Image (cartoon, rainbow, N blue to C red):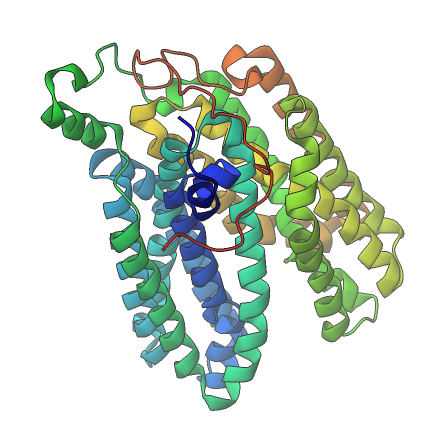
Length: 444
């Protein structure tokens, strides 16, 4: 149906092909990460702010990661059972309360418990959010949608790091309370503006509207762990993530050992964030429609050999060049991996699939620092970076092989059985001018 030009201009979905609810979720991600003041300051708040030892600060940060492992799986299950919006709101509320408690607690057991709870809530949001976006966005637009979200995450994180540095002069407690307030705002935004998209809930609403809108019939899908191809993809993703995490764990140690100051590492690390913000959207647009196996293979090779080349770096400029190489791999993998998971998952288990995929990253965040540090101490930096090159290359080849071999991966679109227990896949969105770019504003 043709609509007046004025209506088209006022409708972001008509202009860009992404639904209005997507942009509210995108905005909540941006707000959440701009308000993520506590992350960069957690270790300092425990040591310089409250006088705890460095070893205890490391334990607390490990507890955040441990909670994150449980949160990804719990959030996926809850998203499928009680709903995407309900899970997102509840997890934001839980995280906000835990963040505030972590900021004001002054006993070791309270700090540890708050950190574990914060990690649990913060990661429980992600599979529910990704499942909601999968419900909302047609298959051909999902990779672009997840790329936009990854851009918001990195842009918000960069802003948060600057703001946290300015706020620390007023005390560490303020940082945690402000972070909790921003997280609470995200939860309110989701509750007010994001519809519930869980298929069972949508089917009940449709059934109430008329007899022709009943719930879909068809066989139910099995547990996620029985999907062998997907579990192999998750394993390869975990290898990729273990290598990627070396950029924030062993890389600063190596640079310090070679005589570079922590400030120099901060500059090198900033190059990663700035490059993601600058290139995530245009590079995703460039590879849109390309073979996903080839995109994932390129991601693994760039990440692996970016870290592999680090063995040759001896100056800040050289370290920065290696970071720029592996950041290209990060940019390619982040939206492609989530989009592959979204397209693979049956509609009634999208939360569980995203939780399993997110679990690979959470486990890597927990294991990679200790594993990388052990290799560095026992065998040295050359062995560490060589191993990174091998692992990431293996991950890229593995992801390419499994996505090329399995038709549900290869097509990039769910089959009729996978996309909702017998229901046909979503039809492609009509072609519209300018669909490749995000809207300037947000829906009101």
